[in-house]
Amino acid sequence: DRGRTISTNSSTALKMGSAISSAASLAVTYCACSSASSICNACLGSTSPQTTGRRRSVLLLVLAVVLSLAFQYSLAPAILEKGEEKWSIIGSTIGKRMFNSWTSGCESYYSEDQIGQCAANAGVFRPTFLSFVFFVIAAVTSSIRPDFNRHVWPAKFTIYLLLVFLSIFASNSPWFSGVFLHIARIGATVFIVIQQIIIVDLAYNWNENWVGKADACDRLEWGSGAFWLRATIGACCVFYVMALAGIGLMYHYFNGCGSNIAIITMTLLGIIAVTVLQLAGAEGSLLTSSAISAYAVYLAYSAVSKNPNSLCNPQLFEPNNTYDMSM
Image (cartoon, rainbow, N blue to C red):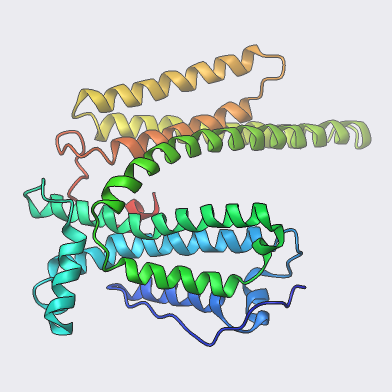
C-alpha cells in the first residue's frame, strides 16, 4: 500500500520576494506534490500504514511554517513597499487589490512601521489559518474513515497550496485579523500547556533511560555507570546555564518597562520553584526541571520580544535578521 498515491500532473510555483524562500517553497512543493510515489518515499522514507498520515502531516506543518516566514518577511514588505509601483505593472486592479487586502484591519495604525508590522502578522495568519481548517477537516474525516488519513496526500497538498495562493488576495479583516486571531490565542494557550506536558514526559523518560543505563553498567561492568550519571548531570547543567543566561540577557535588554520586568521575574521565580519541588519529591528529576526552565525562558523571551510598546521593546523596529526569524 506504500506505493498507492493519486498521481497529479499539476505543479505549483510560488514567486516570493526572497530567492531563498522561493527555493525552499518550491523544493517542499515538489517533494510533496510529485505524481510519482517514489518521490514521496524519497522525501519521507519507507512508511508503514500506521505512520504515513502522521509523517505527511508533519511535512505539511513544515511547509506552513516556510510559507508563513515567506509571507511575513518577503511578500508583505514587497506588497507594502512597492504596492504603487511593482504590483501596478501586473495590473492596476490586481495590485490595488493585494495592497488593500494586506492593509485592511490596520487602519488604527498611522506610522509605516506599525502598518508594516500589522500586514506582516496578517501574512502569517493566511497559511496558518488554512492549516487549522485543513487539520479540522482531516480530524473529522479520519474519525469517520480512518484510512483516509493515509491516502490522497498529493491531492491534499495541491488543494492546500492552491488555497494559500488564493488567500493572498483575501482581505485581512474579518477572518484573519479578527476571527482567526481570537481562535489562535485560545489554541496557542492550549498548545503551550500540551507542550509542557510533552517536555515533562520526554525529560522523565530521558532521565529514567540514562539512570537505568547507569544502574545496568554498575551491575554488569563494575562501576562504569558513572559515565551516564555524569552525562545526566551535564545535560542538567547545560539547560540551567541556558536558562539563567537567558534571564540575565532579558534583564539587560528588555528592562524598559514594568511589564517586561514582571514577566522575567515570574519566570525566574518559577524556575526556582520547579527546581525546589523536584528536589523535594521522591520521584523528582533535575533533568525535568532544567528542561522546563529552559523552555520557560524561551516563552518569556517570545513575550517580551513581541511587546508592541517601543519603550519596552528596543528590537521592535529593528530590521529582521536570521536570528529573530529563527527564534
